[in-house]
Length: 290
Image (cartoon, rainbow, N blue to C red; front, side, top):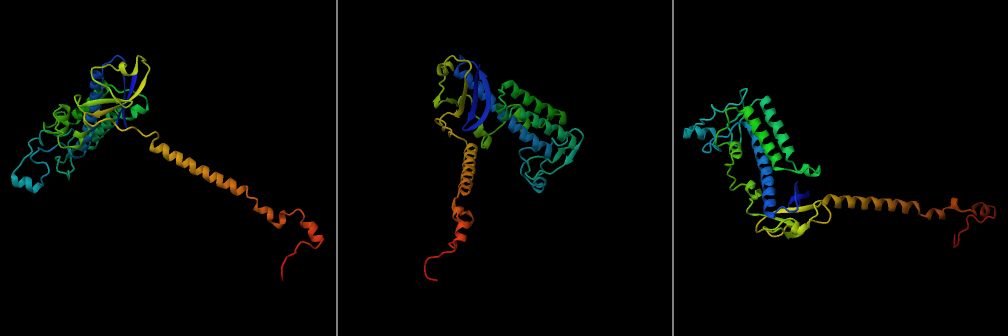
C-alpha cells in the first residue's frame, strides 16, 4: 500500500493509504471527503461547546438582539419549551446573543465535553505523528459519537435552525465565514507532489511507478491558487535547535580558550629561577632612573 501524508500548505493534516493503480480522480475524492469531514467534526465540536455553555440556538430573527428589543418586537422562541436538556436547564446568559441561555446541567455538560474531546482526538492531526492512517469510517465514527451525545442531552432533538442540527443534516450555510475558506470541494481540489500537479484521468503509478511501499507527501490545494510554496529545508524548531547548539559550542570554546591562557607564566610565582635570583640579589632589578 502507498502511504500519503496529506498537507495543506506547510501544515500536516492526516495520513491515508491507497494503491498505486488508484486513479487520481478517486484519490481526490477520498482525500477531500476526509479533509472536509475533519473540518465538519471541528465545527460541530465548537458548536457543541457553545451548546453546553448556553443552550440551544435562538431563531435567526432573534439572534443578536437585546432582551428589550425582543420584548419591543414581541418575538418569541417557540423551541425554548420544546428543547429542554435532560435533567433540567441551568440559566447561563449568552453575551453574544446566539443561544437562549438555558444550558445543560453539569452532568450533561460533562457528557458533551467528554464526547467532543474523544471525537476530536479520533481525527486529530496527532494521528499522523503516531503513524495512524485516517479513513472516512473514522470520520463517520467521530460524527456518530457527537450525534449520540447530543441525543442523550436533547432526546427530543434540536431546533431545525440550530447550527449543530444543520451540520448533521448537511444543511449548513458557511457563506461569508472563515470556515467557508477552509473547505475544498472535490471539483476545485488539486493534488501536488514533488512540485507537479497530479492530473485527473491518470493513475498514481503514472507518477511514482509500481512500488507499493512508497511514502509520499502530497499537498491539497484549491484550483487557481497555483503550485504550493516549497517547504523550507529545515523547520523553525530545527533552526532554533541549531542556533542553540551553535551558541553552546561558542561558549565552550570561549571557556577552553580562557583555560589555555598562558599569561600566568609571566607571574613571579611561575618563574623557576626565582629562588636563585633572590640569593644572587637579582630578584628586584629595575632599569631606568629611580
